[in-house]
Length: 588
Image (cartoon, rainbow, N blue to C red; front, side):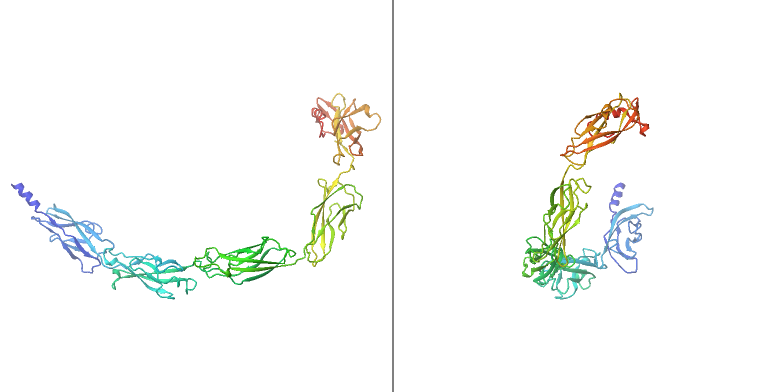
């Protein structure tokens, strides 16, 4: 029975902890009673308050009367710092033992309108294309309010305080009071960048809380709106006719074409693109845009000829990089005529053909005819005379009749001259007219020289070696050479000279068309000998050359050749033996 009474007693115990509310920003005096908790416990007990705001940071914000259960706040609260507190209430007996609880105590901080609306930026930038329809959204500006979003304290309304400049209307724009969207009010026709007093407008925007009521707090920011350009103006030439002059034969810019375009500079709606419509069949001109001033630079890229035409009439068109808007088209002012007058310049005579090629035999008699120069003056609208002269004659072989242009020899033509390259001799000639000032033209004369057999052949090498003992290395090879060309060269005939008795000591044998073998027939004393030879080419008539070669007779032992008496270095005998049997190109 006693146990049942104890259970009944515990069930009657309960803590009553109602939620409590505290306005933020209260003024002293403190502490202020904000509510009361109660207990049904029969025995003696005291109340205890724990948790954040009581015995935990922030400590001491709330307290409880341990006897009455009254809860008090000790200082002003800030909802924007801590909007809600959750504490624990319990009861303990006189011995400190827990009797009831803990039970949560919820304290809500009631919002006060103590925060102004704040825009994220102080200045906002937006753009709207000129001619945009009424109601076009330009930009959106929104502010934030730190107050309770569930109250009017954070409900914002937007308004335009001021527009600068206020022309053509002080109400060119409208802002949606709820969303902060800025829209155009002005008609598309008046929203014309080229006629508005400025292309940039400033709006002072205000955001007010308390749903815009008179007691609401406000915040402001500035919106800068730029009226951007569209290509609604075609470029127009400042003149319908431009004139220019240019010297024939020259290139470069001859005239700058100027235009007007009311669109925004440095945009594709303003930048010009020029083209030549007609009047340039030979593609002698081109036109480019000057990036600094948008002018068209008409340039001659192929030299003009006064004698062909002295006046060029071009039709030029100008367009924009960006296409025009549909309601605008290019008109007659977007084309212009350019007249380019070509000025006559005295031009130098022109040789034809150039180069002039002739073929002559070498060794022609001095004064022989070489060729007739031909030059014409391109200034066919003038009557001018031409005189000829030699400009460059490396060997000094030529003379030119200044009036007739006939070229004759003044010295013997020599195909073997160092001034002749690959059988060709090159000279430069000049023609000068009698214009004012005189003009000159140069031409090239190339003479191909045919060979004559005017160079006797010679023997190579000029020094050879044999062993003094005819049983050893007793053979050497010599070849014929000639400055002439075929058929005045090989085959060569190489023979012993006509000295009496040579055939008893030496024997000459032909190896091929260019070389012969000379053999020592008996022993000779070590010394240097001059061996007479006769070499003959195959020209018509043939040329012969009586010449001598030096034969060094050396001592040969154990494949070594000692020619010290002839101031010779030692030479490997085996190498000479092999070398003596070569048929062509041999040099000792």
